[in-house]
Image (tube, rainbow, N blue to C red; front, side, top):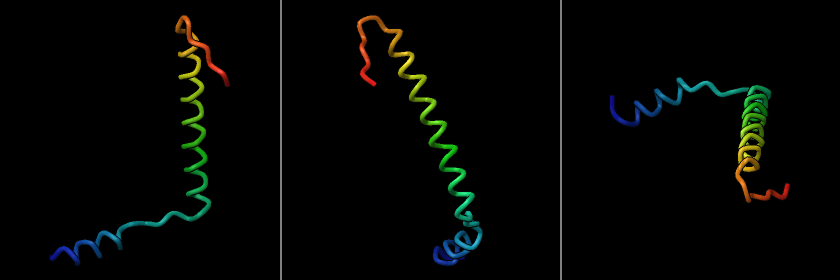
Length: 54
């Protein structure tokens, strides 16, 4: 199999997500990252002398 055939084979194996599935995945990722940001802000507040303006 040459490189073009391999690439075409891989493209055929890729399953595209439906728009609702993609939206759900992206929303979950955003929620996860926002939670991580809140945890980091909390951790920063525990460091003496650090002031966070939210």
